[in-house]
Length: 157
Ligand SMILES: [Zn+2]
Image (cartoon, rainbow, N blue to C red):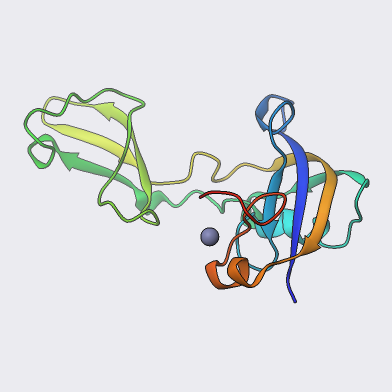
């Protein structure tokens, strides 16, 4: 039987800059062994108990992976829809599949656009401050779906 584990977290990079946090919001619930959270984080959380707090350092390969230079590509402007307004920093997906990589526009030249398909946190070592706030058995539905449905198994998604 898989478990659903809930935790609060604050994520910082190695300079201490906060990248993300659940504080002041709902804790994050995940179904274990379902790749809902990064492996380096799940490995430690899986052996914690409700009420435990921990600082967890996750190296890039166990977080969002190393930067893949092959995902930094130049695209002809003509490959974008003619009415597309291109701005550096904009993000888009090549197709509507939720699992396809998100590309970020890095620079715009006269007839080419450089885009980066790496995850924004690729290549970064991450530092999590976590507190476990809930733990229960997964419902059958959650096991079928492969993800958690919130604190009580009835969350929308
Ligand atoms: Zn579901």
